[in-house]
Image 1: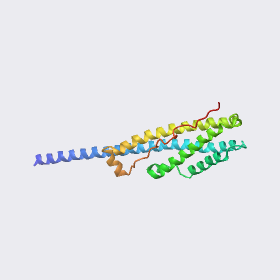
Image 2: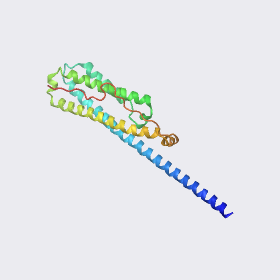
Image 3: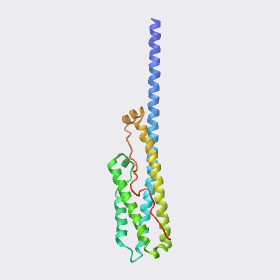
Image 4: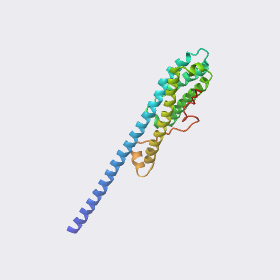
Length: 202
């Protein structure tokens, strides 16, 4: 009888230990996924900051270029319209869980970057603008911002890769599904997206 009780007691203890280990692993796995999700949100915030910096520079750039009476209005209108379209998409972390909206966001930002690049090419025809100190400073800031955007996007993609790998790998995928951790979208390398506008004042 005592042997039977001892055997039952040992089995109960072993079962409790196993349950305890599973619970601790689940807590650790959940906390790890929360940390990685926060890292993605933090990297996304850096992307937002750089895109917002570009959006903030554009009105000053447009106003400076408008001072050149003969400047091509269609090029300026393209930049203004592209900025307006890009500003209509809210850059919230929820965007990362919606592939369709994320693609629209990326396309809008890509179109804005392309219109800025075309503006830089057209500026080459206007020597007065190229010698304007305010314009030159704005161009430096735009070029610097484009480089920061490229770096922020790369860092974001690296962080998302780590997160997506975690939620897809067994056994963390079980906790990810259980607690609603979703796949995040990457920035795709569309044509010219990672290049700063070509600026040549020679």
